[in-house]
Length: 97
Image (tube, rainbow, N blue to C red; front, side, top):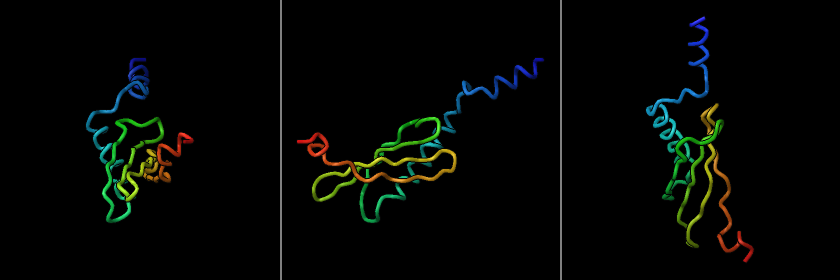
């Protein structure tokens, strides 16, 4: 009976990942998102520390002649792949101004 309780506790989602595992996750998200930035462009990448149950996420900002472009990098935790959204509309366009 004790082994069943121990197994249930270990399999429980309430058991948190180690800080080393979260650091490795954030490093992988950063690397995969950085690889999607076009060559020659400098990007600022802000990785969400934990993401959601299935996805990691990062905000990717690049400089362009008109200012800055902001995109979201979506990282699939299951298969370790990432993709970028198209850039958000400039803030004044997004607000309908």
